Structures are given as structure tokens and as C-alpha cells.
Amino acid sequence: MRRFWKWAGLVLASVAVLALAAVAYVYAASEAIIAHQYPLPLSRVHASRDPKVIALGQHLVRPYGCADCHRPHLQGAFIPDFGVSSRNLTRLASTFSDADFDHAIREGLRPDGTSVAESMPSDAFQYMPDADAAAIVSYIRSLRAAGPDIPPPSYSFWQRVALLKGAIHVGQYWFPLQKQALDLGARYARARQMAMTA
Image (cartoon, rainbow, N blue to C red; front, side, top):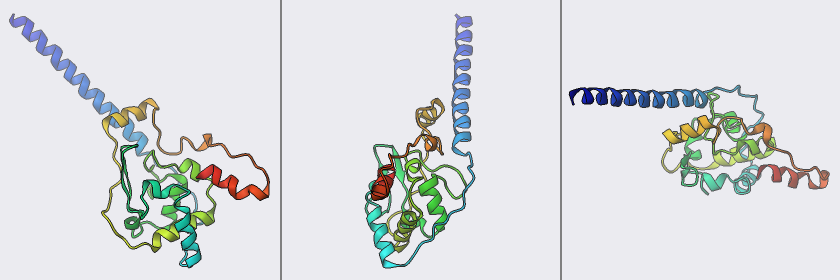
């Protein structure tokens, strides 16, 4: 009986060690993906104080869906559908440059080159014109900082497992897969662009 308990203890200890090793692997391997740094392209976006540009930005945050995740006043919120929190853009305005906002919107990248949350649809926004991006950034900068400062989303263990299995993706995985809409000529150019991004 003593031998049985001895072997049982060894088996349980081995299982525990293997489980810990598996958890450590999941975190280490997924962190390598999450922490991967992409090169930041040169941004041509500059915020404006022109009321017309700001008004355009206020309008564009709705068709582009910014207000859906970051909420109407862009103060961020928890998004149950994705299990993540969107950032408070009115607070980020004090630390983000115009280029930082542009990279986050159209490249899905933070200032250090790492990926923003996988729920950010930057793969579609890659076709957003400079003028639209500048208008949105201008509108963000026109807002008074309000609401709590919401930290970047963190990944749960099972989200990390899904990341390793390829069930979810971060970074620019989807960028090459985003197809452009049919070009029907200059008359429909704006509608075509919105169809690819909104």
C-alpha cells in the first residue's frame, strides 16, 4: 500500500509538472506573438483645428464604427462581444501623437510597434484616406479628457491558447486578405472607399 501511494504521488507530481510546463509554454509562445514589433510607416496625418475638419471627424466616427467600440464620446468601455475593453481616446490624446493615432487606426500598431487588440479592425481601415484619418484625429483632440483611463486589454489564458491555435490573430495578419471593392468609376469612388472600410 505504501508503494502504491508512493507511485501515485510521483504520477501526480509528474502531471503537475507537465501542466505547469504547458501553461508556461502557452504564455511564453503567445507573448512572443503579442510582443512582436512591426515597423512603423511614415504618417502623413496631422490634426487640424479647423471646425469643418473637426465636424467631419465627428461625423466619420459613426460610419467607421469608432463610436461602436469606443462609445459615442470616445471614452472607451468594456465590449462583451470581444471580452476586451476599448481605450479611452480622450485620455490617450495627451500621450499619443497624431502619428500614434494614425498607426493605431490604420496599421493596428501601438507607438512601440506592437499590436493593438485583435478586435481593432485596422485591416479594413488600411484603405482609409489621409483626410479621413486626419479628421478623426482632429475630432479626438477637440474632446475634453473625461472618463476613466482604461488600460490596454490583456489576454486570458484561453485567448492565448486561441492565439496559438490560429483561432484569433493580432498584428497585420488580415491585411493581405482584405479585398478591395469593385471599382465602378470616379462617380462611386467615395462609396467604394467607405464600402472597404466602414
